[in-house]
Length: 131
Image (cartoon, rainbow, N blue to C red; front, side, top):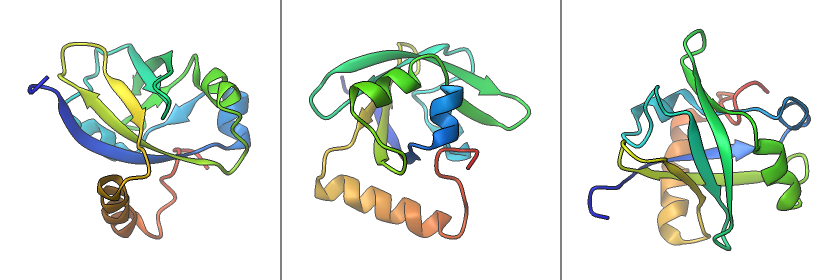
């Protein structure tokens, strides 16, 4: 487990458009995560209870962003999400196996990561990609 990275946390917003399109764009910063690579075609979303959803992961050369497709809407429905709900995800992986995107629990460490993230991106509309 020591080779797994927990190096990237991001905030995702449930929107009408990403539910309709069944597509969630990750912030550009996700490309810096050592857990993700362009050949990766799948990721696993894990909620706070430890339940998981296999989703498709793709990389758009034109936008320079990863995005989740098949499975995002099901994750949102199964977790009774409403438009405007926010999730903090921590990307976990070793760059070789299927990466996990775990919903951060409400702990101080995650809050600190998010505070840093939000202070860097304040004023940008990077939540969830195309808003």
